[in-house]
Length: 183
Image (cartoon, rainbow, N blue to C red):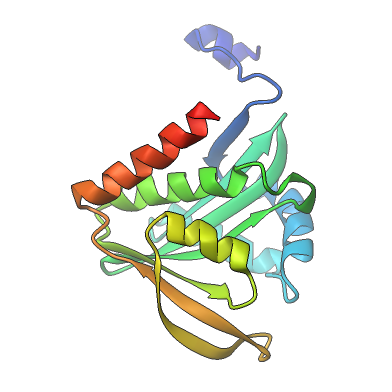
């Protein structure tokens, strides 16, 4: 238990507990490792630094997933008028299929609701059927295709999830959380 946790009377999470927290500059070296394996044309550290600067001004929201204090995933979104655009969700290749992306999506979705966004949107690689399945679980539906969006080669499916302030979306998020807690 660290000093701050002792003073505040908080328990430290177990070493095997997944922790989602705001992304900080100190996370970037670990994020860059995941980014390099997740994307054929990864963002640069400068892009992430710019995104974090915009987060400080309130126009972005970026999270990291930590397991045993190690960065195992991250995600983020941009606020645009009444829509939140999910920019990225990535998980360390050795940690996939453990619900980490689901946890990141839950936190991003709750945050989009909290700040009053009406909808969520994203692009997903046409070949990434597992990510598409995850996004459908959250209520995203395909609305179009961006031809050769990725590396000027692969198409992207544009997906939207509307009416996220409605009780039905809140119930969807609660159901996903309940399913996660039951497993």
